Length: 126
Length: 469
Image (cartoon, rainbow over all chains, first blue to last red; front, side):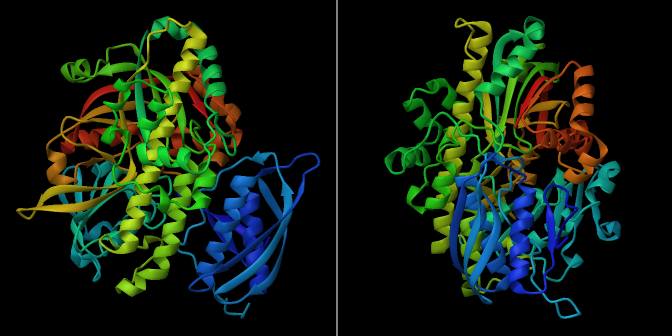
């Protein structure tokens, strides 16, 4: 599994690995969607959502990306199953998310936080 | 596990981590606990986070943690920190994502014996009247513009203007249910959109409506002043500013992460993101936070009316009005004045999972699901010791994942049912996560506050029906 959930007294820590920035951002998004436990409609309406962001560094860019997606998940009941990155640099992102409108979510996430968040390469360079 | 070798015992319930513990501490850190509870206090990273808070610019006195403390994100939950109004900072992480999450206590005209045969009906009816869970909207949908701004400006008062509540309600809410410095224009469109249909909703997680009764009176005179009597049925409401508050926190933590370097601020954890209180960004966040706090008070006011309607549905239109005993915030920042080292000083007090406990003010401490809750009365010592603050609940001691591994919704329902407690919950997973054993013992936590002299025990409430998202 490219993402896993770690212990925290009151919240949820997520660890994500990927062999590219795109893979990392994609699986972080899918991890968050999975945590929200979307309740799929029988024939969910397909949706597309464009997101454009800049941030001071790659870690902040990842957290801001998740928070931007979270807004649309909460307000439009959207659950994402695919993401295409048109731009993904250290500090800038343009992406198009695809998914479907869902009946609701089984779990709530207030926000993705910067607490102990860090994007880095592991010793093998991935 | 925290290294307790370097801490100092101040009293049997108060401990100090001295400034020498870490080079970057500006003040010592202090926390409230019985010696027997220290293993729970040190089990996660709450104390390490408290030490981080002690490094923030302009902090006064001590970084404080209450006996219900546990690991949060950036600041510990159960944390209190006061910063100099001129030289200090404001930090959204020191207030929390659920701005003005809080508790409201209602008293009814019923005795426990009078409603015991109606508990299932009461639970079901409240569950259907108070929307809960994720994505279930309320009956009041706010249009952008004046409708929305009036709620953010006026808080609970706006609900009265719309016919939800009575004037008497406002007299028993912290700050009258309205903070004066709110500026709706500083709340983002994203935040308003998240909150547009969430007034009068409970949400998920540890939020609840609980019908209970006064099991024990500790202070007869104080209980009488609050019109609480042995066996009287009460209703506790625990919810906050919902998605609107979450988004205000997200927006401003993001902003502060971008600008804090301009103010020469470098932090051990960027979730502590902060700016000087007097800066443009600091003032803007404070105004947006106050707007979100007002939204939360409007929310608890509308939930109150939904609970009143539910009681009328079950017991008839002639049901005596449910009266507000008090309503307190436990995630908020306020400008207050204290004597610090012999000098009166204005500070911005951050309470994250901590309740204001001014002398003579009711302090409401909800326990975990199925256990007791407490009504206390703030004492003078809170002004000297804890920047007028108390604990806010039992405090988690176990992760949600571990709680789910140790019980199931079905088992929990069985346990609670055996105690005569009715449960209405939309989420089986959420129910298991809130199992009582996932929390500290509320009696121990409240005893620490009582012994410290911060607030004195007035009454203990026991649940009869719990309604959750």
